[in-house]
Image (tube, rainbow, N blue to C red):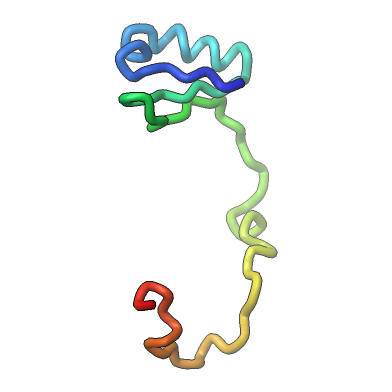
Length: 77
């Protein structure tokens, strides 16, 4: 289970929490008034290029040059 820590408690013991994350590899969630705002987690270097990470993410590509009508905008519905 991910540990949750308030901002004020984190501020007082930040280095201690950094060392804990480094040692355990488990993330810590920083909260403000009980709501999650930040996550401290170990850095994980990716060996994939940005293009490789995006590959396969386009689900549908019909006609990119077709004009978009007002009825196609979900925000206006």
